[in-house]
Image 1 (cartoon, rainbow, N blue to C red):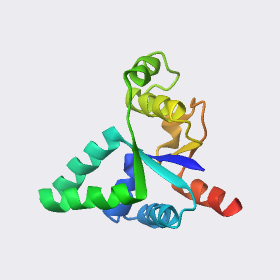
Image 2: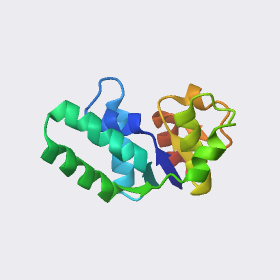
Image 3: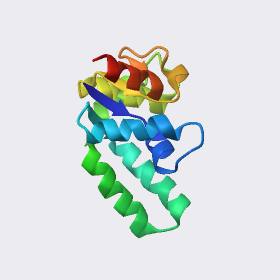
Length: 139
């Protein structure tokens, strides 16, 4: 299975966010164990750097975190066509619509996010971290 992991899930794991980190960290472990093929978007990489730098106040630590992250997750480029297709999307949040279009073009099987309600009109499956982990167990 090929899954695009949303920024919020990555940050939940990296910052051990209360109520969310357990499932997020299990998603990291599942990627490390090759239970699925994990991806993040290039935009997520820049957002993750920014959020980790704000959290750690260290450029070196933030870059080290990205290097470790890139060993678990491949990075998907967002193309101009993804942005163009997102404009008329049924998904109201433009950033989420771009992520969906990127996932479709890259032939992802699903998106994993805590914000599933924002993806109600997604043409590809969208799972919460808990739902995704259950799906991995079922396979």
